[in-house]
Length: 324
Image (cartoon, rainbow, N blue to C red):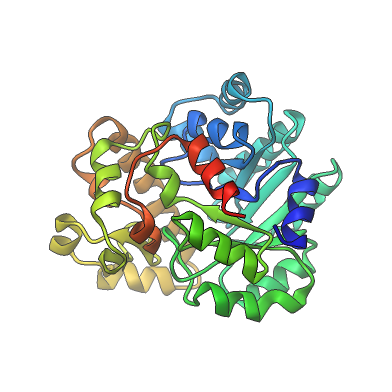
């Protein structure tokens, strides 16, 4: 374990520099708890917790606490799509802090208000970035570290490979977490040896016993290769990495002309993104019960190349830790 990783696990209060990234819709309480209980860090995705799995936010946190007493984190999506959404997110951050959560991952906006709240309670804020200009803005807002989302990630991926992204950000003086492309212990060790303080994984933890994703989704990850991952605009309005299923091939990956115009319009883009968010909330919620249909949008990263079995989340954390 490098010095950056040692400092990271000490500051967060965990044993292993392994993070289960927040995933919509796959971050169910049992998965979050299992990763943390094994010495990694599970991250709560609040929309998954409340809208997909049906918990009141505080009761969902209580459910996780029934399963583990170890540290957990929370994902905060802060894009100003609506004031109602932001007010709800602010309330959830306050409730998480009251519940003892001290690690927050922010994305899609200015994290300054989260930094202010979390630092006042002695916590840490890491911000998702895909390139240097966003990293510099996040540093100016006072974040404690960066989640470096590379071009091999699932969901909203970046454009650079892990090595290029690390090289472009390492002089900023913040701990860097690799996000994307890690599905096996050997690649995990490579990223830590490169200098990353930790590795965040999503796709690898979908293919676990604890994850509530459908069996079809998990099998698709096992069957897929890196070249099967494509970017689609039809899920959230911006490119998202998914498995190129027959459904995706049939409908295509590009938003229609009107949707693209609205997404680029200064006044309408936030409302259009809100529309996509609402659509995805109800679509994914339906997909948990009925795996065929909307669930044919199976988000995954190019780390599928290293994933060949469905395992316990705790075994994954320990196998990766043993590689250091």
